[in-house]
Length: 472
Image (cartoon, rainbow, N blue to C red; front, side, top):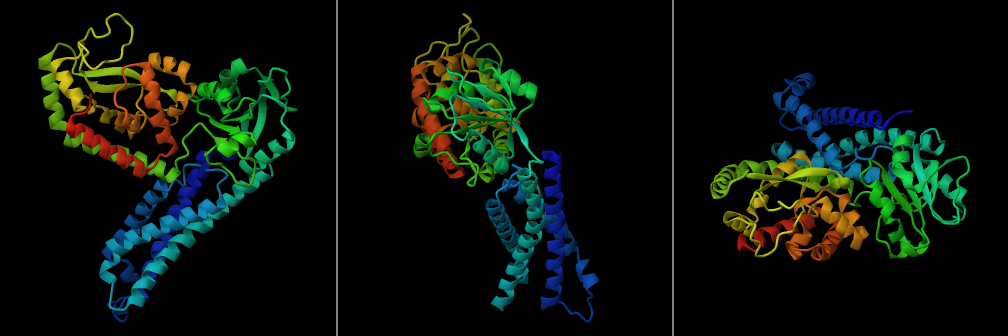
């Protein structure tokens, strides 16, 4: 059975070759319609060997491959939506044509508007048609393999009660998504949930079984007590590299604003990752890396000055490393300029800072006021531990206390944590677990409405906070 990496390489190869052909055909079209080309003295072969055209034959396909990546087309390989595929291809072809038109073809513009419009239309049509045709062929083959059950993805099913028409639901799920039940967990007290021909495993052993069976999908059927009752299971599964879906009852679907992964089959809703569009997800990551590297370059001298001041102010290392919990509950070391004495937690118990905390150094108080202590976190952003905007990462010690009060805190681990967040903008620093729970509501709201525009608003609000010195 073909794997995801091989299929992705097929898409990449076909896109690259199709784009190369589209650019070549477009240059041939320009040869015959370009007013400045004297066909009696310049042959087609000579025209195509012009330095600028040879350069465009390299640069345009590479630029388009970047757009294809940013569009999110390569993120999910199997079981693509035909509608989203054609829309994504149209968008990338249109934006690519715009870039080429204003960067390269601006010199080809003439007083004849029809000629100019035709240049745009021909390039757009070539980029769209030649790229879309091999894409739809590959996608159709994958969908056919799924429908004929020659391509499937093993999954663990979790149920809590007797599910009406269970067999029909399982068939529908497999034929539309390729997700195939290989094992199940009966979480109901009466032992009513059962899938014939599948292995039964115990709920307390779910992580071990997920790893042993090498399943990449977990489907959770409706719980009589609603969505909140299955959060402990979701919480345990988030650190694993698996996609977690829920099949909610109708009452939850009415209230839920989650996006469905497929409109033709069962209403599976993925809860193991944010519902941010794949294009936005890629753009956000690329922007994080670019902005993070730029920030480190621009702030290199100020960081050096701050480091010297911190070193002169008190004994101890300049950079403070602290273990935090990040995306999918994976731990990482967060970097900050040290703002407290070395014996700040000498008793061994983690403590939150307060407004007049005596552990904070003189320089540390200024750094916190303007949030300058968080500048080294751009290293975390470039490394992939964090994002510029996202929920603030916490320590495991405090997460356990937050989870006791609000189990849905685990949903924050659907995205990378950030240097700044909606919670930090609207609420600020938390000095107690209760305040952490209060601030969490803003971060959950951010995840539900996450977008590039929202990130820009949060960054602007953060800039105002830093400039005004309201960091404390």
